[in-house]
Image (tube, rainbow, N blue to C red):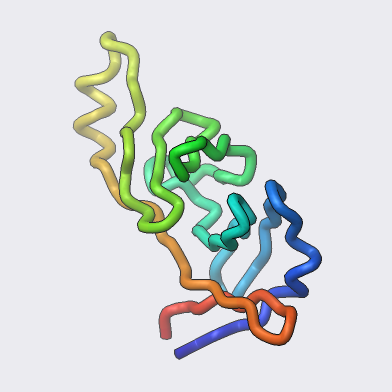
Length: 118
């Protein structure tokens, strides 16, 4: 397993987020409900950054650009971009639903670690 130490756990307070470069990945680290999650910082729809996305009460992050929502634990699509009716059919054909990449995390010796695929 390819675990990489990111930074001290104390640097990620409840409700905060940090964008970090881990290997070749740009990862968004979030601490919500005392759980640390690591997700790719690119929405799988248009590859735009998720860092300013809203975290919902039902454990999802909503893309700030087109409002698709992704489960923070699994990366699964909770809702896909609610396109206006005029352009919905066209853009829906151009962009299929795709899950968000989620990376395993752990805290060890006071540090946050992220696992990357080998």
